[in-house]
Length: 160
Image (cartoon, rainbow, N blue to C red; front, top):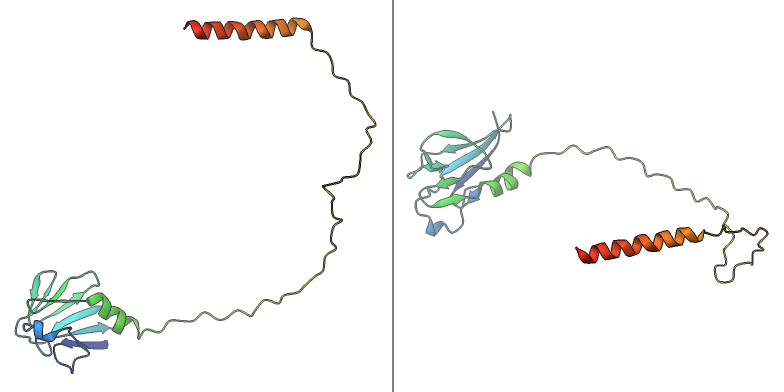
């Protein structure tokens, strides 16, 4: 059982009249019918046209053939049918989409929160140092060892 039919051809009586029909004399007035079945399959029925139709280069003459959006369809010998546009215009537009139930708007509640005390970064309050830390003196032998290792590494690097 068919859900929708689209008659394609040169005639102005067709659902889809081809562009510039005077340039495509091999397309019949009522060339073919594109129909969608209950199972959402789309078929091209060749309506006894004079020059037939081609699906992906294969002649379909007085016959019915299942078609997909990716198929290359030629009516007659020259007219390439913009099948993807026809599917969008006729077959996708009549489908009803289920609308999601609308959720109620969330209730917005404004709550005032106490503001923290501002911090004065420019003139902070002076802090009183109550503890003095002493730094232990590094022994002299450590400095001698460090400088010697550095010099040795420098000379080895320049020699190589």
